[in-house]
Image (cartoon, rainbow, N blue to C red):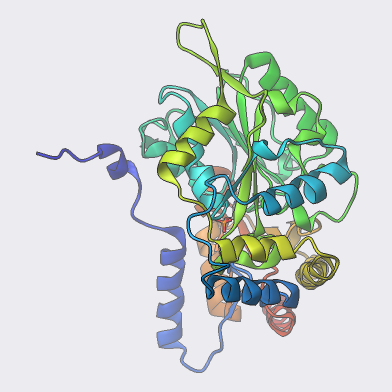
Length: 410
Ligand SMILES: *Cc1c(COP(=O)(O)O)cnc(C)c1O
């Protein structure tokens, strides 16, 4: 008899975006002539840039000939891509990585979800709140998160990020073993300055904790003062794993490629305290068993982002989204909304004007303006009273949404 992993049963079936879709469909059914504009979408909309498309075509042609065909690739990823990453993403910021510290993957979601396999089930975890749901849910599945009570998991420490603390999470009062950080942040669109990130690295070093740093939105940072990588902080190589993705950087949500950095100095201790074990080695072993590499075509596509043309083209698309963000941020602020984020990330975090609950404000915005947002509480308890808007839409839609919201709030 196969007994089910009952930890899965603790997860709620109500997936945030499915709930939203249901409500939007109900609205459309009763308002067939109203065009709905979505500022809720978490996916990119602009096509792949020409440099990437050409690289993919070339790679497909190689696959078509016996002499240049590629079968299984190395599990860690091809050297050409790992070399390009070390040289372009890290060296210019003064970070020296060994190629074998870089693991190519099929996107950051898999690795942010899988990485928790490397440590015992009874480690404690901490997350900034609100948060990308993958971090907690992947821990729920193996029983590390405890049980859900009033929207909070019993074994998870939440570090609230709200307007009250300017979205800078306070260091834990209670010891935590694993800390998930995502900067620039999804959903709030806010960032951490170097000094603030240093506080977390120092906490981890002092407490022998592990930081899981999701830098999926690194490419949206508009200022050199803001850390692009946690390894810009001294000591981070001893306590942090970093996740990167080409999804938001270069529109790879449908191509699938990203990478994870696991430094050689990073270790975790055995239960009896007698030995420290290299996590780079464990992750390598894990990948060799459970992962057979990212497709050759996707890796050639990613490599093309580092060419001069690719770099220019990708920058232009990010510039387009960030211009959307600026238009939305300035427009909404002029309309009297309290808006956070959107300066170094494609997300705006908007406070509901009269303290309405997130879902109520979501419905008001939908029924009064035909504009879809994402209720903040869907990302965690501290998201209550906020909604998330994204800048991934078309320019015209951002402008029209603003106009409609202006007409509504007058
Ligand atoms: C979109 C996103 C990712 C990237 O996911 P992929 O699997 O690489 O497409 C990772 N982390 C966060 C917080 C995201 O929003």
